[in-house]
Amino acid sequence: MRKITVIGAGNVGATCANMIAQKDLCREVVLLDIKEGVAEGKALDIWQTSSINHFNTRVIGVSNDYLKTKGSGIVVITSGMPRKPGMSRDDLIKMNASIVINAVEKVIRYSPEAIIIVVTNPLDVMTYAAYKTARKDSRKVFGMAGILDTGRYKAFIADALHVSPKDIHSMLLGGHGDAMVPLPRYTSISGIPVTELLNKEEIDKIVERTRKGGGELVNLMGTSAWYAPGAAAAQMVETIVDDQHRIFPVSALLKGEYGMKDVYIGVPVVLGAGGIEEIIELKLNKEEMKLLQNSANEVKATMNLLDEMDLIAD
Image (cartoon, rainbow, N blue to C red):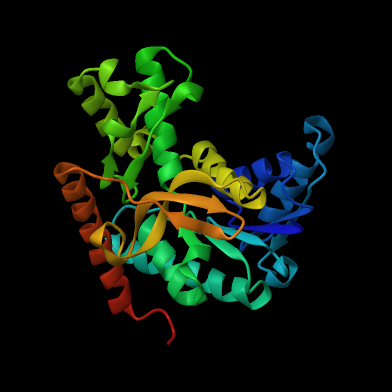
């Protein structure tokens, strides 16, 4: 691929751009930010590691110049504001939706065929905002959340069992964060069901810690995570660039799958060169299906709130 753009040169965006460059996934990574000099500085810093980490991908930083993003095959949107003291949930949604909408409008002007990956929180509704703004096939507009949540889940299981996280396979569904739906039935370690290695109480503790994973890091560092979110977004980029057809949980628009329509929610998909190649419908039991429906209802309510704000031009 010739060019990949990352919108937002904060910690997550810079980490994502760095990993894309180190994997040599394209000829050029464009890192864009509204703050003068930040993207240029971080891009230069990354580029100066090229001879050390042995990659050829050029890293270019720009301040709000979307013309430099022209011809991007993939655009990763990480820009947004964290929730501040005294800020309501509605205020956060309005602020970050405005940022995402503005970015997507400019992105599609110069790269109309680009696949768009959204990382900005609240993730599922921001992905919906990007989709409505882009007015393109939903298979090319989706959000990164499940890979991050699954990564946290696997890390905690690896700690509990003292095994390599490489041997752990799992799947989480639903909205990003507290509304996520754990699936211990679909969790295994080298083919061994996790339920044979950990008891229900131990699994429940890991699930709860995963749900609160982002908050745990904020409490420790005073800011949101960036290494794992940036790495998760870069993994999605790699899968698309190399047409790997890997199965990952991503925030995708449902059109009847799982008995739901017109809602962005985390589900397993096959990712390839065309974006979402297929949405996989798991055979959920009644309890799992109820949890997924509750999660979808929460996301749908937030999507409706965004629609009522009337931020997206018809």
